[in-house]
Length: 447
Image (cartoon, rainbow, N blue to C red):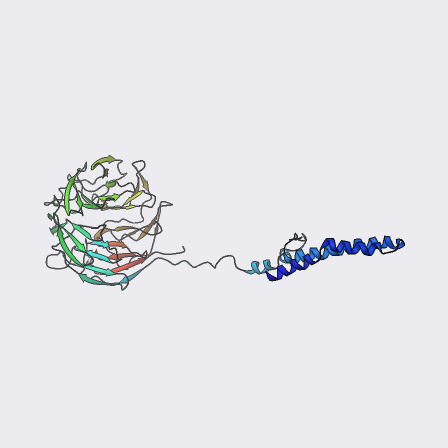
């Protein structure tokens, strides 16, 4: 700034009127015969003064002259820095794809199948109940998986044995476990109406209000208002007496109230919370025996059910996953006891179903997990505890592709999406019996 001010002050000292007067006085004193040359000298002097002033202005940056570039010159000669820019890589080197893989992690303390697994608010996983290897064949034990250490620790036991129950993470971070059975055989089920709450802060269980009706193999759905909708299932008896009743649990009061019954009694069905707050119930087994293709919608605003489009095929013991675009993918399960490889899509905007590509293998008692990239991982299931072959569904193309195989085939296990995007597969059954083994699925990247 000081240098610029000095330049302007120097220019002011070359006052144009004073300079002109000085030149004129000298000219008048010159003899007439020399006036022609004198005027030429005057003109040259003025031009020189203007040139000096212009140079000062341009040098100070007050006047900016346009830059003329020779069109015949190369870009590098017109802009010296362009050659350096051209030599700089415009993109990073391609990263080699990382294939999907399975790795073993810490084993469960108790081998178990038909248990529940719930991702807690702190990132740990609570596993509870199920079928085990003890004298009664059922478990009341629970344990926690820590993803940081990759290990399991025992936590408080439930107040009773449970299998075929539900576990729902509530808004306050507690877990509601409801119903199930404390005795089961090939011919009968003793369903439970009891319910209890797990508090991760104290690692303990407390009883809460019992359900209005005992049920097992039902569904439990956390609604937008924080209440839990329980629907259908099997009552005590032969296990084929499917229920149409539904009820709501209110965490604020710890009590249950009746809500509208389903149009059709069903068990081993699926229930999916839709983006608009309604609940889609699909398929399952009926009291009369055959698997169901019917579906219905629960409206929390009215507490009532309405029929929606029927599935393309009947499904029972199947899987259902809400896709990122709001469409529901239903797949696998059984029809007349045989596992299915079929899959279909429900569109809530039209209330209709459409078939999508069949899976590469049959899956009964498997799991379907929505991954962070929007694809669906289907793992395990099959006949006699075998594996149907792990595969991925791409909703953008409606196609299936094989992925890495689990380290151990399993069915009636649990799959939990962890906070880091990996999937925890815990327990289950194999031809050799109940499993304590656990493994992690790491999705591939860059492929």
